[in-house]
Image (cartoon, rainbow over all chains, first blue to last red; front, top):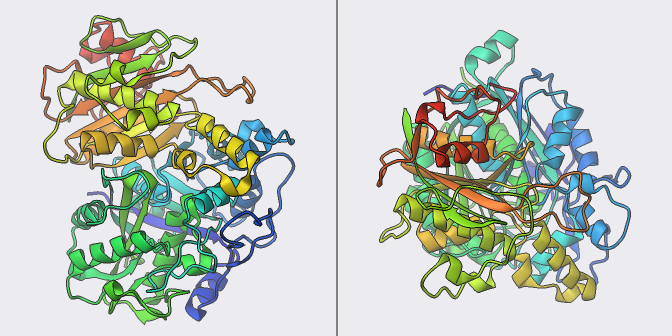
Amino acid sequence: MSRVWIVGTAAITALGEDADTLWGGLLAGRTGIGPLTRFSTDAYKSHVAACVPGLQPQGPGSLAHALLERLCALLPPLPPETVLIASTTKGGVDCLERVARGLPADADDIPLPALGAALRRRLGLTTPAITVSAACASGSIALGRGAQLVTSGAAASVLVVGFDVLSEFIFSGFSALQALSPDPCRPFDAGRTGLTLGEGTAALLLTSPERARREGREPVGELLGWAASNDAVHITAPARDSRGLIQAIRTALAHAGIEPGDVGGVSAHGTGTLYNDLMELNAFRAIFGERRVPVYGVKGALGHTLGAAGAIEATIALRALAEEVVPGTVGCTVPDAAGAGLVRLGPAPLCGSRMLLTNSGFGGVNAALVLGGRPR
Amino acid sequence: MKIFVTGVGWAGTAGMGTGRGSTPFDLPPGELPSISRHEVFPEADSRFGRLDAFSRLALAGVALALRDAGIEHWTAPRAVGIAASSTYGCTGTDLEYLATLGEAPGLASPQLFAYTLPNVFLGEAAIRFGLTGPTLIVSDEEGTGSAALETALDYIAGGGETALAGICDLARPAQLPARVDPTPGALFLVFERRPTLEPLGALNWPEERQTHPDGSHGLRALATRLCTGRPFSKIRTTRKGTA
């Protein structure tokens, strides 16, 4: 199978937009979660979130424009024929909120493909953009789709950009579902009380080794395997027996041509909700058996960034491969019994040369990626 | 490789139809009728009535396409994927949810919120039909469904057995400007590596990832060709701009 190199990454999160600051923050156990002031939270179950510092709307358009404009400044030069795959759960829903309230809003940002198309034009790319929406697995599924386009020869290079901004629409909904933690979330902790929302964006540039060499681009890692699945059990709750995630992980490992024993670390979805975290830990037990592969989740530091999560977490996983160490799980102090020996509270060395990344979401979706470090 | 088209199902302003049925394929502009359970499923279905309008429309398209392909019924889960494209997705449901939020922020409807992700109907379809493959909304800028079509075909080319590609939109919500105004309706096609029934058509994939001679592409164009009896060799798809 053709190989997929990752030749550029960028991320903007509640811990800032500098890669070293993000990585250093995760290693130090810092959190970007703080009081939420963007709108009143008086009626909701939580009053905290992980917002990108200094993010302000630019006129009546979606706040996502401001976020993506910052991201553009971090991107490497792109071949004009690069295919942009945007991943988002709700795109410009902040504009829809304002439309519903009779406030000034740019309604052109509301259709699902709109913000991806706007970003594509902003970047001067000539190929129409694709927008992936698969709930909280959007980013990782978009990466898999991008890799598929590269390996099939349909695209020479693909820029995957995951993004979502925090809106009252999303916040109120998770509050209504009783899914928000009143305090900063504690993924995989025995006393976890729910998730904390965040916002952010990340970009990964995928291309073939041949194309990268021709353009003089240095790889930062490889996307070796990918898979997605559906639980076919429930639209908002994970399968108790982890069947969908297990299927996705096994397929991704097979696609990468590796065994579970080759996995040196796991970037887990780790929302901090009771059932998601337990479902994931049971899946990891099913895959790894008694092997104590280090598992971590970043949502205690960055919040749940929804459609951006997979892309953000992939940039972090690539850094983990480069440094040969996984960060700890910010917010987790006493791991759930199901995660004993797996969940790392602080930084830990990788125990293999491949990283597994997983996400799951509403609609029963699961996604798994296998990442490799910088090709030698 | 040769990928077979084995089912077509649609629900639109002019009614519902399937590739093997007698109703000519047509998804004209107009007003969508409300879809009731008995029009789609002969047996009782306690979930259907609780779905939002977007999910009901899309699920009708999926059900009709699977039925047309002869693979609606199942006994064990199967790794069938679905890729669907939409312009507005569940924006109508979003507005309904926002109305409950406007009435009392702390009492917004969790039931409605659960349907404010455009991919949730795919979960409904997965549950009803035992589909455990990849499910995603993948929308192209032009609203043709070409991105969904290519995703489904690539899934099979990558080793999958069966996938559906579809396009689904309700009418543009009245609060939104008419600059982007997709034709309402749902259209789903079933693609199989090994067909259960006599195929309706076939594509050589990925060889046919190229521009169709007349410039038309996407799911509607493909369904039109399939359902008007054109030879299979004329079926072409494209991702315009990269072909």
